[in-house]
Image (tube, rainbow, N blue to C red; front, side, top):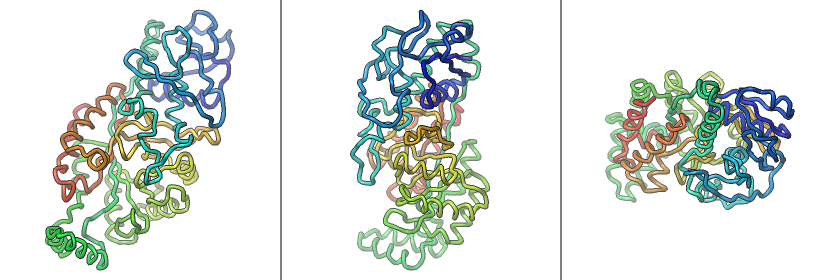
Length: 440
């Protein structure tokens, strides 16, 4: 066991140390405030406090893990070898920063509690983040720090190398698919189909008009109907795949077919037989617990089992309010942690973590699964070609593999179809999972 001496054991401290040592490094960790117990421990150990006890491995602590509430925190970036870090210690040790307080600042999304400018969809934008501004958004820097610190522990305690490395984790990939629009033309009803035809005629999109007729009359398969292919690829490449279904009422931002449509219900039931499913709470649910509850109950009635997974439509999360609602609704896995406007690691980790609620200073049972890249981000926000998008995702996956983490992507059935505005994207998804399958 790795023993840590500190002058005070707090919820923040135990939370972040367990994330780093237990969840990332798979190392058992203990805490003590007794100097005698620390000195008598013959295994790997270090002190995390204000002053060193003697000549032990010592990390000078920042006050962040020993305080409560939200206040402005000064952040000055420095370098730790080739890696950025902050909360400099002013002590001539082997680690120039308090990487534990820095990790807590990043993973708790402390900066999102502070005043900031929101984007047009009321989201915390990537450009406002410390990671984006200091060019480490594309790296899971918390995991990088953790691996680097483990190397230091091994060098100081070589006789305990096995204790620190015997339970290495493995690189993992999770493919997630958002079903915002289950079909392009099918099951839309008379009014929406007529409206679609008129819109296409006005825009001189005659190809769409013709395709709509072929699909509606059963001559051609709907372009967005990619479900058999997606399930076949899941089986072929043995990739964990999760489908998130939008079941909100029709609105400017929620344009799926009706949740009451029998064909849509049948589709969901069929997919739930072969893959994991979750709720995709609608656009206006971000601050509205009753909407999430209603949509969750609709999905539960369809699949006939409790729904535990969720991802917000448009990635609209208000921290901590949205997550507090999800906790109350007994959602245990959340997949919205990432940015729509840029790829990378919003919480600076590629390891699923439990949401820490700074309002109540507690670790919640809500496990957050941070994603690294989304198809719409690369195409619509960054104007990347399919080839450049593929290379970007593989580069991110490489960063995750270095730290044996979990790589998560978001695709939509629309992008996998390769039709319409997604022309040229049809082969990207299968190419990506085929490559990742080789290293799993």
